[in-house]
Length: 551
Image (cartoon, rainbow, N blue to C red; front, side):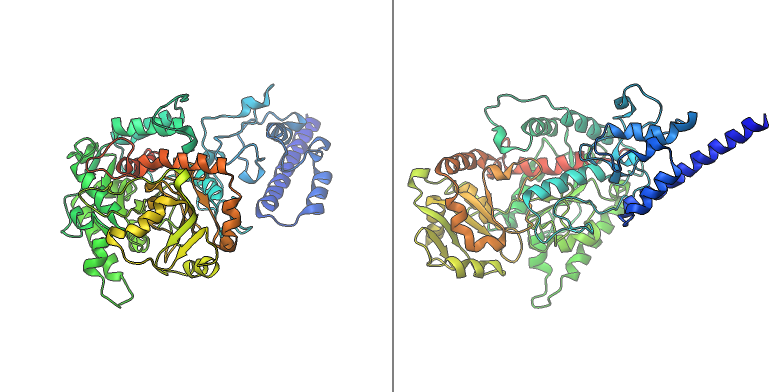
């Protein structure tokens, strides 16, 4: 009996020792310390030969259950408690977005140890929720590189979707379950083979987009706060023309919508804060003060008012509220007190302005010439009549445009780059160049956004976007690289070489796609399906659906 007890104690000690060694290894692996021979010697000296021969991290996902089995089942142990494996151990075939957990119960088929019902946060409870994502475009310290490319933004969006969970609501509501049901239906959308209104090449996932749009039309209810003084609040007529018109037209259509707006806030999936960032600046900014603290305080007082009068903001800390703002200052004006909101903003700088992919929405900046006819001058010449290779004209805002002019103003007859065009009625010269150019240069000004992106599409010109870290509008659903060219700012000297490398056949495909995507960037006196109003609202809805957190 004594010998058996001694043997049992020795076995327990060995189990504990291997567990400690494994934990130490994980610590070194996770913190990326230089362990090398030290860890190898620990494993060779204190663990079974079978464990010694395993590779860490495992090269294939099928190895993980067996490795865990070796650790917990050697020497006849029947220990079957689930083990949390830090994400650093996951091979490339299991991404952080994959719903994965492991159970160490002996399985004849290792795949049976994977429980797809668990989220990534269930998989690794020990990791910090605020950990910096390690994706392309970020350096070894987890911070973003100098320029975040479109493909890297896609990875960031995927990571944010997988890792972020908004604060749990303080109390439950039926609308939360409706959003969860919508999310499930979107994620399991039926495959679309043929759709005459939606070309699959224009979308990241046309099936998901169409299902999400249908559910938005069927389900979404928006409550608009009545509080707020004009003209900053509730006066869209003040901002229906010019480059800030998106926020005015959206407010106009949202307030007039009998389909989406509800007067019963308990039915609402979203709450709209109906202010104009343009009017906020125009009415409250003190010229030459070089500060907009008073603008920020004005918005704070508004939040204090509605959160004190109602409990809707307090239920979710604002995560089901949204704003639509096109002024350049909108990110900084709303960051301190409204950052939990879904912020639809023209200034969609993913690196420098706190724009969060997956939460915030890239608002299209549109130039409207006539509030009575927003489609005035719409369209352009066919490809055969577009004689200019590339065109740009604009004020010398920011650092990039002077560089563009330095390299290309009056340097090549095929490239028309101007500091300023001669004055003409209704800006006719500028519009004619847009209508007759193959590529339209959309160079950033003081901020990443520019109305030229939507102008190019409006006039049937392929956009060439030169604006590092700019998230283009409707980024969640549109495949921008199928109909636009993205050029890093440092590549301005190679502008022509890059454009002429695009074959004629490729250009024709891109130009045709520009014409197809136009429907998503048009304001109408009365909204129509898939137009810019519905697309903005859809992006807000889509981000809310994928961030809902049930109580």
